Image (cartoon, rainbow, N blue to C red; front, side, top):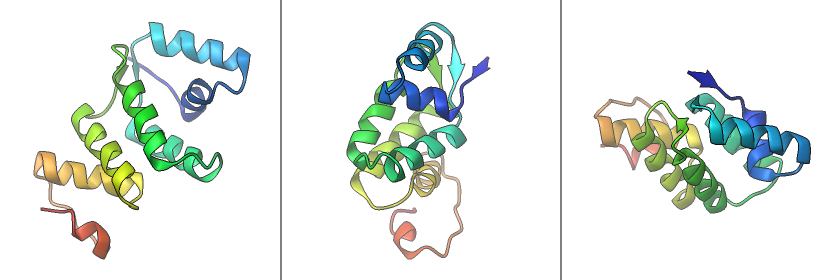
Length: 121
């Protein structure tokens, strides 16, 4: 299994550097790669804070990328849940992932975050 880092994801999604976009495309579309939740969280943060891309757009971009047959993640169902929640709430991606683990996998999540507690089961 191969891993990709945040820069590969960003260059692929943003297409802002032709050479790096071509290399990222080659990697993501032809190699079986794992995009860890840590990399996804960092990519979402950078897309929101640096590039000012709306949450819904980021969610759609990342859901589409995670659906590629060559792309694997820690837990595809939890990831889709979290990205969908990201688009609909003001929660950050890590909170959305934790809520996904809680709602879909039954994992107990401890938090002091009142907004997050509303979504926990």
